[in-house]
View 1 (cartoon, helix red, strand yellow):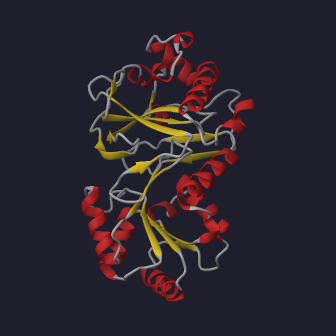
View 2: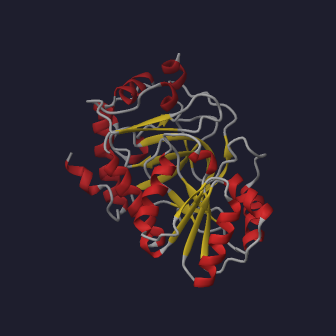
Length: 323
C-alpha cells in the first residue's frame, strides 16, 4: 500500500486525519472482523468522513477473533500474558512495521538506543513466549551495541552489581522493568542512580497487589533516588507505545492518538475523562482503531493519564460477535 511509507511521519493534525481515514476505508473493506463489527453497529463506511466518525473496535475481540486484514498472511503472532483468563493475540502481517514503530518511537522521546546501556528486568515476560515487549527490548538491546546491555529474570544481585559498575563509569543507562520486578528489586537493594532512567512497563501480573501509580513510583523512586519514574504504555494489540517521563503523563508519537469515550455509552465521545480510545496507524494490517479497557484523562496539551480499568465490558456489537 502506498501509504505505508507515510505512517511514521511527524504528522500535522490534517495529515494524521487524512491517513487515518485512508486506513479506515482499507480496513473497513479488508478486515473481516472490523467489517462485521461495522455492520453490527450499523455504520456505513461511506458515511465516515472525519476522524470523529471512525468507530473503535472493542479490544476484547482480539481474544475471540483473528483481527487481521485479508489476505490473512502473518509473520508473527504476539500474545498477552493472559493473567485475566483468555489471551489476546495480535497477528502481525509485517514485523518490520513494528520494528520501525518502536525504534522511531523510542528515538522520538529518548534519542538513539546506541546512547544507552539497556537493562531489562522483565521476569514474567521472559517466562513465556509470544511477548511483543520482549521482542522490542531485545531489538533495542541489540541496537544499543553495549556488552553490558541485557535481560534479567530474577538475578537481582547481578543487576545491582551491573548498575553499580555503570554508575561508576557514568554510563547513560535505561533500566526498564515490569512493576513487580522493580519493586522486588528495591526491596532488596537501594542505589542512588545519577546516570540512569528508570522506566516501568506497568502490571503486577498477579504477583503483588495492584498499586496506584503514584504509590508505585514513590516506592521505586525512593529505592533508586529517582525524582521521576518513567513509564511505557503499550499493549499486545498495539504496535506503538506512548511514554511518560514522570507523573504518569503519557505522550504519543506522531502516528498514535488517544481520545476518551463516555463510560456509559461507548459510542459517545467524552471531552477529557472516560474510556481510552486509541488510534495506532502502525496497526495498518490489523485494526488501527481500538477501544481499550483503560480509563483515563486527556489533558489540554494532548498528554493523557491512565486512571484505572473497566471492571467489566459490555459493548454492543462485541457481545453479538463473541456470542
